[in-house]
Image (cartoon, rainbow, N blue to C red):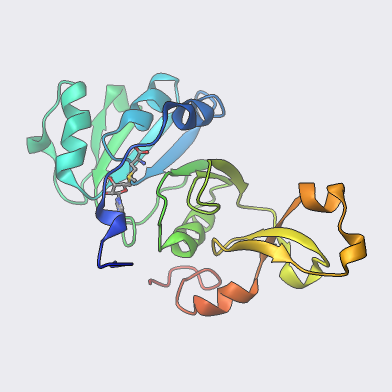
Amino acid sequence: MSQGAGLDWEAAWAPYDEETYAWVVERVRPGERVLDIGAGDLRLAIRLAERGALVVALERRADVLELGLEQLGDSRRRLRWGRPLSLLGGRLVVVLADAGDWPFPPVESAVLLMRHCSRFPHYVSKLRAAGCRRLFTNARWRLGVEEMNLLAGRPFDSVEIGWYACRCGAVGFREGEPGRIDATTLGRVHEVESCPACAAWPRSGLHTSGARM
Ligand SMILES: C[S@@+](CC[C@H](N)C(=O)[O-])C[C@H]1O[C@@H](n2cnc3c(N)ncnc32)[C@H](O)[C@@H]1O
């Protein structure tokens, strides 16, 4: 999807800093099923699998996946579009496919390290439909990585004042009476649904699971 000066940000492969990966790894439990969306060269997926998680790594660029496969002594020639490739004794399953239409498997957690992700609401909707409870992502606040609870969420209108972060990926500050702004207000983020920006995502699939952007 083109943005800005015609650059397709989502097609770009750009790994993040080591702290980001370490932050995610230490929060994942052995035996946990994790979907890594846009897994790049598998640098995080391999670490998660080595920690004992059962990882499905989804990536649409074969040239980038190849870098990870080489690390594992495997080769790109075994990759087939949409067909899962089992590695590391089944703890890592690599899938060359587009996350927009590849059906997500049932997982407990997911990773979406993809700033500039334009399909965020669609992925959140698919993850919730797959029973996923939490998402590690840097797509929402455009800054550091966060753990997003996919279960909790309150109606946007019930927030009287303060910071909010919505399922559609939008974040912001709901204004109110200035006298009510204090350290507590500023230090809390309300997880909400149905914020004003959701209206700008009419086909996001956020409220109608299965819809595509
Ligand atoms: C910024 S890179 C980050 C890679 C990896 N998450 C990491 O942290 O090293 C984003 C990756 O997502 C992949 N990607 C983007 N859109 C995708 C889609 N619709 N389906 C599968 N992969 C996608 C890109 O090819 C790219 O490798």
